[in-house]
Amino acid sequence: MLSTATDALARFGHALSDTTRTRTLLALSDGPAYPAELAALVGVSRQALSNHLGCLRGCGLVVGVPEGRRTRYELTDPRIGHALQELLAVVLVVDPACPPSSEARTADPRARSGRADAGVRS
Image (cartoon, one colour):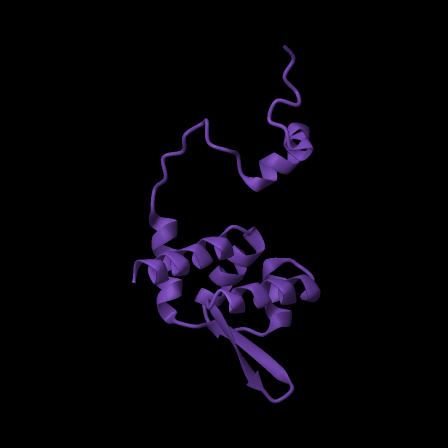
């Protein structure tokens, strides 16, 4: 049981580790949508969204429902949307020593080099 619960949380964490996937999940928590609508809402190309939807399907968080020539996407369980809202309501105490967000890391040339001490002189 613990392994199953741990695997489920790890998949959820992987899905939330990317801002595009997180925005997609939040959009789907408002209700089902088609890929073109989701791409516009999330602000990415349809191709990029397709890749992220594949990941979210693989994590078991979304399902594609065929409707003729189109596919409508929705959360596999409405409780996922509720869980996202609960996570948003949690107040986090952020330790300044924690790694910065992915946006801040990519803006920092030391982070791109893969060395935390790249800009430090001895």
